[in-house]
Image (cartoon, rainbow, N blue to C red):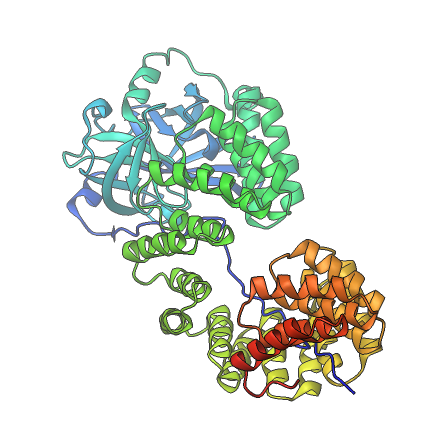
Length: 603
């Protein structure tokens, strides 16, 4: 009795996790100083600004005297309806706010008229500032009077806002930005993932010429543009507290009141992204970019959302623009590398990770992802070196352990792989990829029962994990439990109808149960989804041979050999089909070729 061999190597998926970053976390940290002559000199000019509602502070920031009875600050600091308090650094002096002397909603700037007097800071000429010059931002970050020192990075062309490399945190809004002469060249207003921004001082000068009479705070708070700022601030607060639906409601209101509110579109995009509404997020980022085409972080965030929709080319285009606007945007290089990885452009992805590492040699995430690209290029040893570095930088980096385990498995070290998966799972008990790959490693060592337990755990953590069902079915097949294995493959296909491997595996199992027609149907689908897998053609040929379809079987063996000329079993199987058709000379030639490739092959 002849045995008609098929490829019984059921494929187990080994999932790799490569993560993108939504928000940049690479801001340049500058020195914060508390005892300098500059710090002491301006104590009587720079004030704390509080916006109260009942007994609670709804907004707190900074401000400074621009005239003896006028204080400049940001609109968003004082937008909430209620009284505004101006306090000195020692809190011994309070100035009553008489009203709003002037405001510029587009630039987030307000001039308050106060009762009493203060020492005005000299306003410099923001049109002549130079990139790279030293700056000081003095205000009340976290409620404490401090100086943050940094440098001027650049000037946005569309609105002349100053782009600064300096740490400005909550409470810095409204702080004066001073040059080396102690002149105000800007008013701190907002931050993104990399830079802080300031309104140019010349905008203040223009506004002061318009401040003839003041409007009461109560009346001013009723203006639509100010109500828009108030809604925006509430949206920011809800976003920070991860109340994304409420944040979107607030930001909807802000945009209704001011359809040109750039930052409301950007923040709403972030909230929608957090809820998984990537199309809605992209729409918001589109609107923000239409109104301000020079904001690198908006391009970055839009690219992230495009990537989540598998529009990797579109994502790369956005990361390109973010990098053009900010050549030091580390996360943009990192995420562009991810997009290129997803397109199979591993060499170019490595170049992006190289750049990210050049900019920040302690960027563990980039080492991990570079390792992934190297592994995809067939260099698991080099990949392991990168995973080692990622783990050295962050010993709690669960995904780096999981990925290193994958590389070890590829190098034929399933025990070492299991050790890494154990570590990943200890660090993150919800790490489904680590459980799934550990199951594959255990199966490779012959511990199929333990492998099934790992796949069971994956399914418990994520009942929608098609790969786990497919893998569990593959291991059940090894234990001879074909019917249950087929049920698992059925579930995998239900969850992911595009899984060529699940169809292939199910075909093998049906063939084991002598359901050759059912096996052929599954192989047909597997080939439709992945026409480059030689084993699928070989197995379909075996099934056709069992049904007496010798010509069709030979055609499949021909294709298997075309895809993999070193597959001895395909030559042997073709020889048997030819022999059945009486083509003895051709069969003999195929048998000889099979033995040439594998001297131990069974005839």
